[in-house]
Length: 250
Ligand SMILES: NC(=O)c1ccc[n+]([C@@H]2O[C@H](COP(=O)([O-])OP(=O)(O)OC[C@H]3O[C@@H](n4cnc5c(N)ncnc54)[C@H](O)[C@@H]3O)[C@@H](O)[C@H]2O)c1
Image 1 (cartoon, helix red, strand yellow):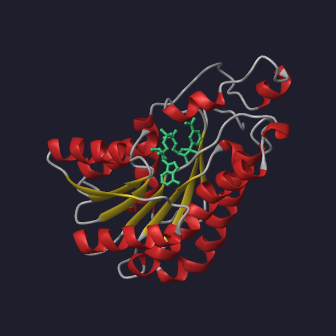
Image 2 (cartoon, rainbow, N blue to C red):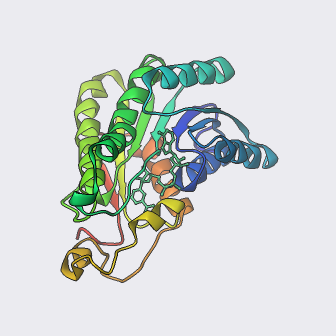
């Protein structure tokens, strides 16, 4: 029960890693407020938490919209009295050659994956500073070095990594710990958009593949890494990138 008495605000809670994280934190005592653009998905997450005896609520929210994020944060605070933990798990992307990525797709990926985290941190900040809180942003191994066929996604995640480090420095003296997780290969709906294509250069695919082929993590495994970063066990960990990638970057 590491999160007993704490309130978690989590984006992307309607699927995959976000859902698994919401469930784990609720099982460990957190009151969970989940947001997602996928209304039925996030409602289902809340239902499963409640069925298991946990406390959860949700809102439909596009993290790319500051107005929508501010409204969702307001609902969370009204429901649970504050926010102690912010997890940014919402994310989009796909494998594509640069020639196939138009301006709209580029902008959307940056907006959701990078500006989305800016929006939630800005909106939740006054609450996160009330009691010493913590933020975990979900980046990617693709944000740690170049990744062919995902230039928009890799750029957004690299931005998220350095956004995390920068604000971790700014808020360390105020007791707000901020870190990020850099996963690779989670068994979730998103991974279907990253299946390497026959026309991709094999050496470039190998460069972003783990040493043991086709290894995928379950969302629940990654949720445990997020829970560690958000827990008091990690109280000395600030501004770090926890890489959980089956050795891909080793
Ligand atoms: N699946 C992987 O292999 C993998 C690897 C590295 C990093 N990640 C990152 O992990 C995070 C979770 O991904 P996942 O694998 O669980 O994918 P997922 O597709 O299962 O879940 C992502 C969730 O984000 C939501 N979302 C998308 N756009 C949104 C928006 N504008 N506002 C609010 N919610 C929005 C989706 O509706 C979905 O419920 C993402 O940030 C992703 O980039 C995933």
